[in-house]
Image 1 (cartoon, each protein chain N blue to C red):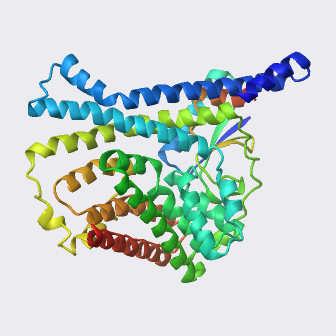
Image 2 (cartoon, each protein chain N blue to C red):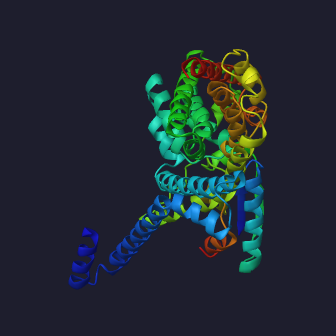
Image 3 (spheres, helix red, strand yellow):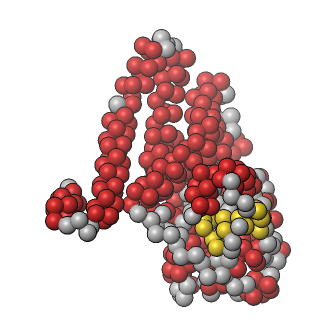
Length: 77
Length: 362
């Protein structure tokens, strides 16, 4: 499983990345976390509001700073 | 309450609707909770003057006849007042925003004639959720859908400049007239600046790759239930009020503090309405500065309190919020420097006119 954090590198994107790392560690799921900072790729995934979170290429949330608990729910999804 | 009646009937009649009933039950409960909170809000708000007096005189033991006593009572009244107003408005806007995704905004703007599009875009900029780091992906999404360049700019100008936090703070600290002036001139400026940029036909100054971008199939906008919308409102209150309260405190404390210590009218000569050049100076100073609406309020409070003219201060505030160096750097990814310069030039000229107009009128 790959958790993708989409954002151009603002403070909120970094916070979302940290929250995702926490959620992955807490859930025990084996997943790698990937940062997507390339604008064309972000837009190609249909995202207009950053930070966004996708799992295996599927956008789950955009424009929101999710908590680790919320990300955990998405991981178990 | 009619929904309740339906629930009971359905409850008795059919078990097939159990799921529906619980979700409606939840909705009713969430609404009830919101109404109760509103009641408590009203009660608190209406009794605030009495509470503030009681708090400062009885609890803190301040003598209302001394200067310190009045200052404490002023703080004890103004701080909760502005925070209460902020909480209510941010909550309502948070709920409204759950109805406005950028995808929906984009749909609304595609294929509009320019003038109509500019007006609509400026209005939608106020309610579409948007943080400054999303400016570029939003720009790409809009342009890709065929929203005209000028209309896109109207949106990008109004979104940061006209927002609920600025309005509530202006309302709470300077009264509804200043707040309304800010709202209407901000919207007007976004419409006109976007319209002018559209008229200039500058599409060739957008980086060419922008037009090759394809917005992916969006994950369907998530469907919100009513309790989720109310929860979004509560989350907005937590996030925004949690971030902004120190500025509110600073703004009001500055207002309370400087009355006694800095002579009134000390700025009147430099930033008064007689000094026409103070408006361009305020814009020049404001453009490179970067702050959100809340951060600038303490400065606005100090300037106005010491005799600076309203138009000059509004121009300064708009220049700080609407235009900034970091924004130019972010936009550089999609716009050529010439277009960024034009954008800043047009908006700055508009702000200049707003400043002069207000100094003339008030």
